[in-house]
Amino acid sequence: MATAKEHISEIIRRQPDDSTYDDIVRELAFDLMVQRGLKDSDECRTISDEEMERRIKTWQK
Image (cartoon, rainbow, N blue to C red; front, top):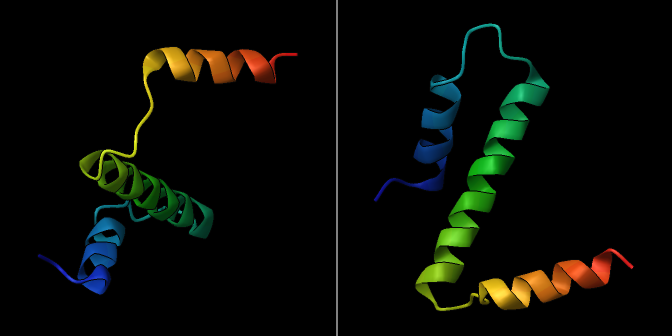
């Protein structure tokens, strides 16, 4: 498995040459969120669709 530094370097390398600092930071943040989500899923820290729907409805009040 690649180190964090190698993984980040690869993400940056894949960005277009005209990417802004904000573009790169946004892409790194997105990747981090995806990695955390996958880890949560692997560790069975998820909720059902029904529970998510219930939670969203409470936000709309």
